[in-house]
Amino acid sequence: MKILPNRKGDRANIYWNESFSSRKIAELLFSLLPKESSVPIALFCIGTDRSTGDSLGPLVGTHLLEKTLPENFHVFGTLEDPVHAVNLKEKLEEVNRALAQPFIIAVDACLGRPENVGTISVKPGPLKPGAAMQKDLPFVGHSHITGIVNAGGLMEFFILQNTRLYLVMALAKTITEGVYQAGLLYQSRIEGRKAE
Image 1: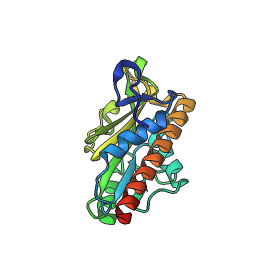
Image 2: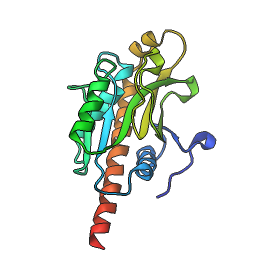
Image 3: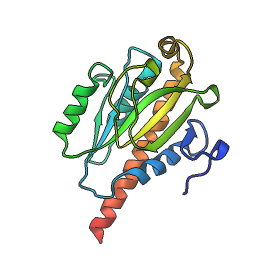
Image 4: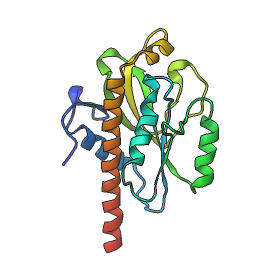
């Protein structure tokens, strides 16, 4: 199945509740994954459970640990052991110590325009965590997945604290399923090469 264009024709932005949203995420993410099966994949889920809006990353990380992922997929950032502004650099160092030249997929919540609330983006390149809060944190990832949890504007801290948990949970489940399906596609590609 090929990715269906979504509203406004932007294939990188997917509404969490549109048809085949997890499959679209899976295919976009799969297209960004390295072709070599020896490259470890680090799913770096950023955020904190102390803020409803910022809990997207740790929720995705926690849900991913409940799935059977390919053996070279590694999850960092869960509700139990979150990756957040205070420990971000330390956790990045941990990833690079644990894995040899990993391909890092950053997962984070973000604020956006009101009409884009509830969308998920899967894009190449790093993301800048903490941008909504004007935090000076390093860029993270070789590719990234973001979910727009609320509208940006003034008082971002207040907005993140008052984001609906329902939407954050729905985004987390959709992203988790998309990453899981991308893992299945990735595993099939590896097994197909072994069979050749």
